[in-house]
Length: 222
Image 1 (cartoon, rainbow, N blue to C red):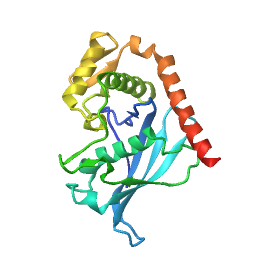
Image 2 (cartoon, one colour):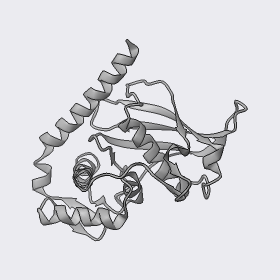
Image 3 (tube, one colour):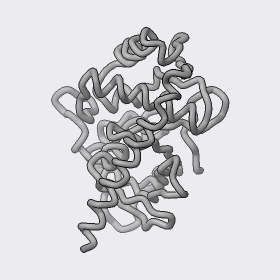
Image 4 (tube, rainbow, N blue to C red):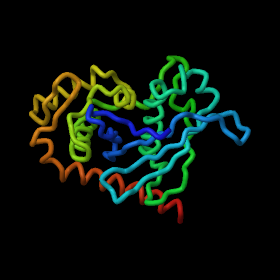
């Protein structure tokens, strides 16, 4: 059954931002199903939408390897959604996903690349404090701009994406609150006028990231 990640308590879609500044939303069509090709993996179809664009999106087939299946508590959304979203987000970071108005299905390997078996944890790459600060600011801006607030800063998927804790993400948000860019109540942030006034900067960051993506895929097509 298709499900859209929800996040702000009002039933609106949840916006996830990449480290390069792209606002994304994800539609994951649960449940996983066993591959019909005879290969030993499970498949989950979905769609990555590039928000604030003219309908650009990327249909994906998330291919879960048998190795990673063994370490997953279950294939239900509560256990699988955050690492899947971050695997897809990292593929966008790596410019492996091309967005189009009618894109072709892209296979994405949900494999041991992002799993540390020695520490029994997902690892997507630790971000610097400055990168986390910018990520939180962009998240609050884009969620407010595209879907409304308040914005959930305590989302474990975001903490997992930058390899930190929810507590650290909230500390980062408190720093932005001290700069009067947002108002923080518990795990929820509301954008202040000073943050929304940075629209030109956030949209320029997005434009640059989109241009770099398009340049990479145009080069590959020759």
